Amino acid sequence: MPPVSDLYSEQSTSPVPKQGTLAQIASHERWLRCLAACEQLDAEMDDPNGVKHREATRFIAVSQFASGAWLDLCPDGRHSSKITSEVFATALQRRHGYYISCAKYVYDAKEAAGETVTIGMRKGDQLANGSKDIPCEHNIRHNGTMYATANMVRARACGKLVLGDKANPQTTFHLNEGHVTDMCEIGGDLQSQRDVHYEVKVPSALTKTRQAGQGSAAHGGCCASLGHKFGFGNTLDQTLLKVLGCKERGHKSQGPLVHATGKGWVKGHKGQYYDALHVKNGIVKLCLVESQGGIAPPTKRIIHNFAKEVGSPSAVDRTDYGTASGSARGFVQHHSQQLSRAAVCGDSQNINNAARNMRVAHSFMTGLNAPPPCARAF
Image 1 (cartoon, rainbow, N blue to C red):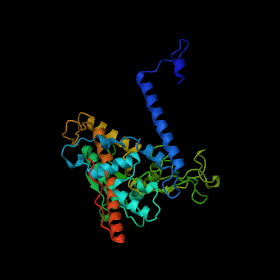
Image 2 (cartoon, rainbow, N blue to C red):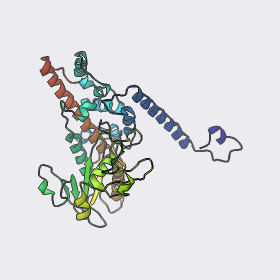
Image 3 (cartoon, rainbow, N blue to C red):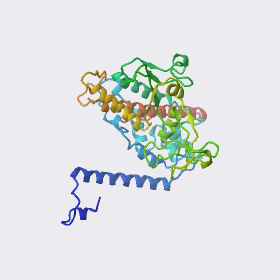
Image 4 (cartoon, rainbow, N blue to C red):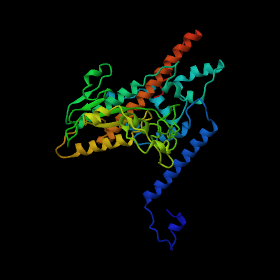
């Protein structure tokens, strides 16, 4: 777009943009200024033992589709619309990059005792990701998101929905050998009547584990961790490779793939659903929701395709919509809120549980009584 002064001059041949377009430009400019401030903060307080590019990654993660949808939920008395005060406070603190209040006491005591306490630890990274001293429960956010996904699939399901059970893998062994499917809709594809598998993943963009993307001569190119550059840069590519696998690309003599040029060798990899895809001729769909609440593009397409299906005159929408006056009435809005809520609240509950365990362990080691959890703020 040419400069504004040229747009409104009499000699300009460019059409004057609409007010909405100009408002978007101003909004994008503010977003870019916020991103630049996060990048500057990362440069000033770079922690070699913490999450690299933390603030830029966090800001981009909470800017993705439906990352804040859980904040639009209207309570109507049902469990699916409730968020406890403790979980809500932790979720807001994680979203905005604040210190986690329920862990403040222990970290203050550790710092006073001469232990190293980093900013990333105070912001909940260690509690969310776990360590050898602080175990975490990632299945909380996974199971909640899986049930929210199952409700979405059931709302337009045309076949029987089977949920996998990792404790009893033989029940779904005939559907996908080698990996327990999260859920499978038998004959779920309307056109071909093929089975449709749904694999639910709830990764976090804020982890210390990173991939430079350089690969190796023996194994070819690999994914790169670029969550500080674009949305889902730390999660989506790695998950697609793990779940669906990839075909071999290029030749080994070319050396590993160079991301900047797109040239090089990528070794073929069998994903977790190789048997379901290539042996049993099924369909596999990835439902990826980051722990910050953002819904990945493949999952966003699933939601919108389901909305089109239930919107046809002959279809039935079995969604249990909220009863409050402000509750979502559209398929996309309702299920986006539920998926985002399940991932964010599950991650916050995991952090609160880890903080409580840390307080108990600290009181046991020091002989002091553990303080109560953070006060109710809402």
